Image (spheres, rainbow, N blue to C red):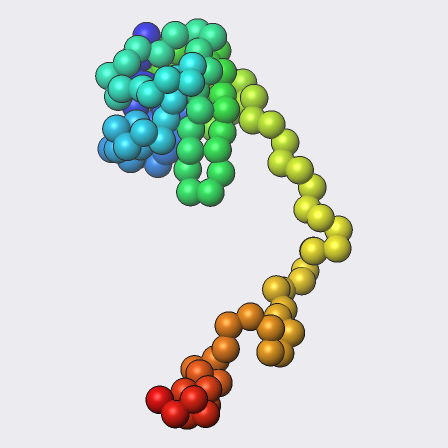
Length: 121
């Protein structure tokens, strides 16, 4: 059995063990949908939800004995990735940038100055 932060580092979820510890303490890691502690023991069958940057991974523990960092193939064999697939992008929105029609939305600073001048402020 290994500590949660050490196991997350060993299976390459985080680059350093201190990053893994900080993530667990910061509430970015949940074990079986409960907040976890860094020293918590990892057990086979646990579902771990890891939040990094903008994405979230849901993994199931297969080999909880890893305490040292291993190669990528061995690390991937230690868990099953249960992350649901992201929905495909909306076809009409691909490659488009949000565009606002001229005059729609809030007035610009120049337009506000003109309005103030018109109102006599």
